[in-house]
Every structure is written in C-alpha cells, then in structure tokens.
Image (tube, rainbow, N blue to C red):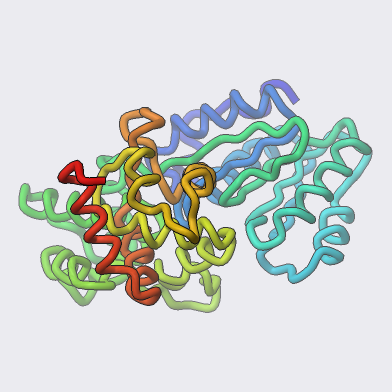
Length: 337
C-alpha cells in the first residue's frame, strides 16, 4: 500500500473543513502508516482523532483500495466486537478503520491482532484514547490544535451558523482567549460556536470563565453522540475508561492549576491510597491518554489541559479532598514537601 497517503492538493481541506490546521498531523500519519500495518491514533477526547483518520481513509478509498469501518462506540460487548470486526475481513488488499475503541479496548485489540495475523493484505487504522498494545502497533499521539488554526476553526464554525466573527483586533484577541480556555479542542470549538448566535464573543468568554462554564457547553441534534454533547460528557467518558488510580490522580493533579513536575506530582499526591510508584505509573497512563501534556517536549514537566483540570476539580471536591490537596500544593510551592 505504499503511496496511498499521497495527498491530492487541497482535497482534504475542501471535503473535510474540520481538518483545518491538521496538514502536519496528516503527513505524520502517512509516514507512520508506511512503517506498520497497524496504527492507532490516540489522544484526548474531542481532539479530532476520528476526523483525521476519516480523511486518511477517504484518500485511501480514492486509490481503489477497499475501505471498511467499524464504530466500536455503538457496540456493547466482546462478542459483538469480534463479530463486527470479523465481518470486515477479506483476502484482498484492504484498509479497516476501527473507531472509538475506548470502552472495549481489550477485545478490539484481540480481534485486530487475529485479523492482521490471518490476512497479510490487511492494514488497520484505529482511534482510541490509549494504545491497543497489540504486537506491531505504531502509535500517533494527536495533540490539540495550534492556536492560530483553532481561531480559524472557530471562525469557520461560527460562519456556518450565520454568525461571521468581526475581523477587528478585539474580536481576534477574544477568539484566541476562547480557544485557549477550551484547550483548542475541535469538539469544544464547535460547541462554543453554537453559542455565538445568542452571545457576543466577549459574553461567551465570560460565560466560559465561570465555574463549570466550559464543561456545560452543549451540542444538540440526533447525530451528536451522548459523549460529545458536552465537554463534561466527553471527559466523563475518558474518566470511565481510566483505572481507579488514574481517576484519583486526575482529581488530585487538578489542584496544581498550572505546570508541575513529575517529582512534584509524586510528593503532593502520594498517600496510603496512592504510593509514589503508583503515582508515577498513573502519570504515564494519563499522559498516554492526552489527559496530561508534556510542556515544551520535556518529559519531566507536565500540565493538565484546562477543561480536563476543570473536570478533575469537580471530582476533587466530590471526594472531599480539595482543601487538603490545595494545602499540599502550597507547601510544595514553598519547598516544604
């Protein structure tokens, strides 16, 4: 399948406007897919994994290669996963897209592994919040959009709703702040644009700055899956896929409210429930799902996306640990831990 990702100039952006600013990631996917028959695009919920893979699959289909797709999100058990994925296989050269594997990751990994072993002409593109762990898998982490591209996407979504954003300096700055408040997540930008028929950009920014404001942005319609109707639903879906130690650490790390080191995470968050080694392992798990980000490419330096932090802070308060963790963060900042 060499060459199947060669781009036709302009076609992706013309047919998939949601991929504004993703040309670099699209090229990276093309390179990675030449190295392996199995590529998993991983990242935070709402970051645009499905859209990136759909654009790649569309280009493959135009080469005449058979493309089949399975959406795991609509399935409810191991047997359904094996049946749905198994029905797609064929002896000829083929691309299989396996989308939204999060809640049935293990059976999806097993089914994909069996198919790849049985059909040498098969290649597979997967989307999930974390890697499958299948032999031969190549992983492509997908980060949030760059700020300038996020502003362009917000403007496009607003225009599609009949609300052109003004091109003056004040609105450009406000749009940039909205994008940063929403972690430059494509899903969140679409939800935010849906508020612009009723709110000015300045009013929207104020609303997003209120407690829970970003998490409460809502999208309606019969085609919107439940997990994408609000950012709270989106991050809640991620929360459900985390193991218990990752969920607890997610809540505790929300107390930092900014950049911190792995060492700081271990010192502040460890206790009888989370040993230092467990914290270190859970940090890696959260990084692997895009729930924590490396800062400037430095593995030791971390930050939690703002909306992810908002969701974690709600859980920290629910667990009754907010005061204790804020005190420990303060002690750490003063060198007392």
